[in-house]
Length: 161
Image 1 (cartoon, rainbow, N blue to C red):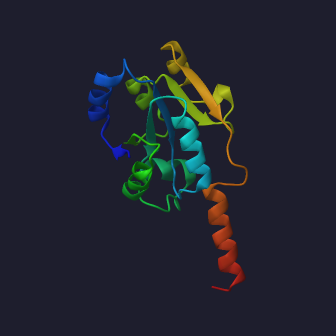
Image 2 (tube, one colour):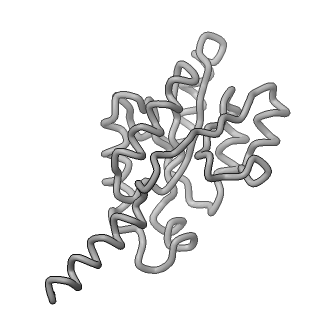
């Protein structure tokens, strides 16, 4: 079971295990965790020995998704992600992109959803230059936080609330 950790502490943890373990990194908002997220994270974890999830902070999510997001606060999102068996570490970051985090961690594998064009994956160059690879993971069709929010709002409207 994973845990939420600071970047400095993570770097210390990785220093002792890097030679023995292939580190996989992925990132996202993970606002309302759903089956699509879980399947994605399990697949990412299967690409190596250790999965690190970079989690967008609340302020970062607001800058990317707008003022109504996130629905779930970062501390709770981190807690839920950390409870997943496939997640080893969660690191919260404040930037709009995880580039600084990727450069600091130097993962062997950078995992991203296949909805991202290879040329648009932040940190891909840094990972490849370090001898790592980028893996694009097929997403579960129709499963997204945006779709869940849309459905809840539709139901709310249908029931006149």
